[in-house]
Image (cartoon, rainbow, N blue to C red; front, side):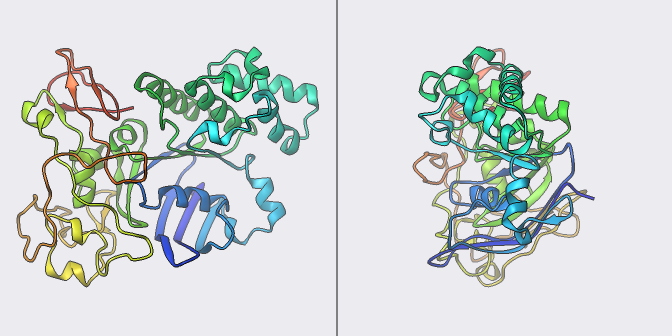
Length: 381
């Protein structure tokens, strides 16, 4: 039995915005699943829906099976018991998630006191252990959030997520707004803790390179749907859906001057969830769209061993033609240059600038570009 199984999940906000449109996912214990996509693709809504954290008025359909039990049909008392103890979440933006007027030790201890029925002394002791586990001195428990750096606050959020030994951790862009070196440290910390404790991990990011380096499997979302899924490194290196390929190609190849100085990108923005285009939602931006893409939505098809992609070009052999081949009546053209990946909600795949030194270590806009030699794509942890 899977630790987590999501079946035909749909989320619609008041006003008709369909943020998630029929998502199917599965996660085994000890597995790391990455979810990638631009801002506005439904990634964070999916994460919140898994633990019923959506705002009032949101309509949710489908099934979310956690250890075989449907989260959507649980009574509220059971939902509260599952949060933190069964599954926990690391929210993006630690400064906004932590309570500014409470010491971090008290905030970490709260779920321990509620879910583990620990004594105050036991909760303080466990808090110190958790802080040391994530690389902070136990004495920092008396600090307020504003007294910590961004990386330290993110470590506190991870400690809180681990407080009640959950079987599933959802990390929603855990490295947002951190500098590249701290990003790498946080990612290695999460990866190490998941490996040691055997918990399932869902990591959400707009950065495909980070997910390919950290996760076992990767799902690419666009306009509320999963458009490609498969082994993380394979999806990054050889995406079968044009959108997955565009995200991957936004990162330059170190050692390739043409790639470094002219990274490929994707024009336009993801569609408004309240006005999703007919047919395949990606067709207005797709460089290989056919006439039928404007009228016929594409289901996920087998695209190789343990791989699926929702594209009309994916044939029985799981291949997709290069950009421009076989495209009649195309409705979009891929433009050179990277899509802007601003944090203001604009689109973009976070292209790295790839200015690498001779030893293959270069700084990218999305993080540290690491490579052992020429011809390796930048990885922005």
